[in-house]
Length: 112
Image (cartoon, rainbow, N blue to C red; front, side, top):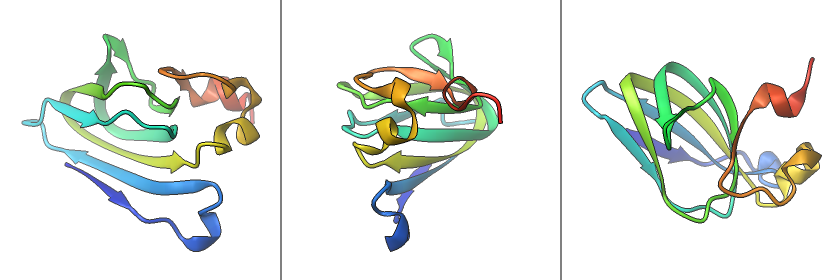
């Protein structure tokens, strides 16, 4: 199942919400509506595919113009941060203008 959780007031300039996905093996898919915001997502367990591609274990998922469907392989646990629409470009310049995209966090953040 998925649930949205509120963020503390001091993080609201950057975040709109948090989302927790805790899907049992019987739930083969999760659905997210089209969103003007992007998300930073970390998958804690399970495998997830979107549009035939494996979703990276930690990923930036851009704003989307259509609803997104994620196919699960077994139980899935993940957490995500729903970013304010203007936050991605402030954090990662390379995200400017990207919609309907998914990129591994390592690609955006570079070496630590």
